[in-house]
Image (cartoon, rainbow, N blue to C red; front, top):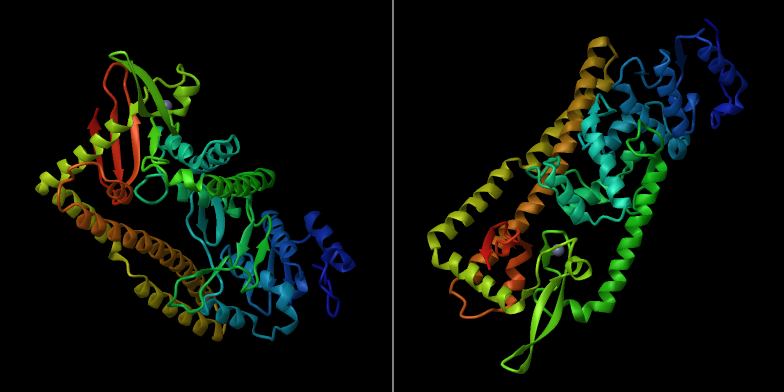
Length: 463
Ligand SMILES: [Zn+2]
């Protein structure tokens, strides 16, 4: 046992303090197994360093007790509070009064501290990120495919063709999930605190775009991808967004020119281009509009899906829609099932969860005011876990509701638009109802058009 005084010495940079360094050396030599320090601010005033040291020492079997805050790294749960306090340290340590924990909890109550729970590749156990190996491989693959130039859609297709389930949303991969994963700094081991904030506990969280301080805790946990890979992905996201913008400007006229523009996808993932085909009929030169897969156009051995006439596409849409309209029973069954599905997912009311959250937070504050005992500490940790999972559930519920509302709006639109059968192809009806048309063909069999409606219904037409 040795005494290492750090009283009155600035803790700003741990490596400047001789005593501190001497203590660390003894830790590394295995002479110390327990450190008792006054407070987090005394231990290190730099958040990154504090977390790193505390974690590193814990891994070596050395635990730290921060007396003032009553935080003990013996408990894994303490890292949750520690990371928050450490993140506050840099900007707020000077103004902090004695009861730091109380201050933290007040911030927590105000909804300023955000914690993400379960995510693909990681499980948060007692505030610690733990890698889920199978899922981590999927995350790695997504970064890899993206950096190899695959589109969001192609990545979804690749994963789904192998039967890899998305983490949420009924296992179906969507562009949104891929974007979420690629932009999530947690995958390289960093955590940004206060990425979102709630102006009020009952209001949805907002993206923090400078309204509140953001704290980046680097190397908070083990990353699934390297920092270099993550940074490369961010650069690539920015590049693609920019490209999309300029393309949109350039082709804004073109994009809205044809109803099928941007909506046709080939089974090979290729995009479709409108093309004029000339042929001779009874000695007369005739022109016909066709849509052709760009892969097929470039190299027929890569994709053997033949060009499809525009008139065929139009007829197929009219046929599929009229089929739905004439078969009212089937349609209302399909729509009914969709609505039911949407409503079933709405079982969790985020306001109820928010009430539970406030209760748990108040309980935690009450406990922090009482004398610390093993029992109260255990209770506090349980509450912190509960708070974390509730915040996670609230966020999820809000995302779900937003998605469900949109689906319900589209279902209503659908009902309105399809009262009477179509006599001929109508641009507006097609554009409003159809999200994508997937075109598939198998060897000698005729092509199949899969109409994917915005409201979630899918129909197939053989042509
Ligand atoms: Zn193709």
